Length: 210
Ligand code: 5GP
Image 1 (cartoon, rainbow, N blue to C red):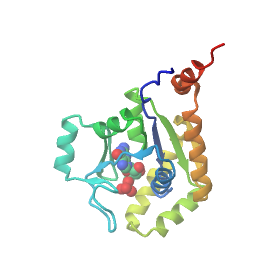
Image 2: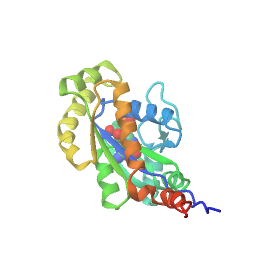
Image 3: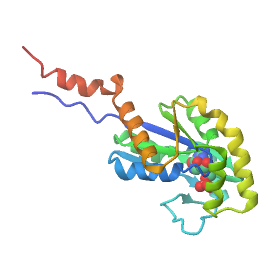
Image 4: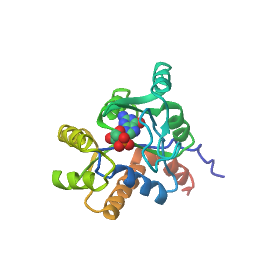
């Protein structure tokens, strides 16, 4: 009889992109399609925008609550983005990974530096828009932000795009569906890496007896 190995730990995927590139939409599509993939809901001190729901888009907390959580070391990573605090709960993410779920985080480049510095095993994916002009059109098109905020997001994008080379994969988000397919391919490739397949491969290989 074969002895099945215990549930392997899930994989951590970290997606970054300039605001307006579409990374949240992409991540949401991915978790709809891939049953073993979950998003870790970030905490933020930013007030909810119209249509955003507590516990769905973010865990919305006061700045004081956020800072208290920071002081207790509850964040795996956190960053000040456009004057608001954003962070990933260490416990929420760890619980998902330990239960064998793959997790996707959509976080800014500062957050990814912290994940790297902590030596946390992850796959980094940087998403680029097809061009600066397309990004500007998308930001204006979603009409969620003031002109000052759009300008700030574009300035930040001009700085952050240079960090693409520090990620494992780069994907251009030209059209949603082909980009979702490309991301699925990356996830499939990462799941198939030899060292991750070893426990399953060994279970199968044990059945090969002559
Ligand atoms: P928004 O306010 O438009 O939802 O997000 C602004 C920026 O904050 C985006 O670049 C988004 O990726 C980033 N962000 C969202 N959640 C987190 C988080 O938990 N950690 C970090 N470092 N950045 C985050």
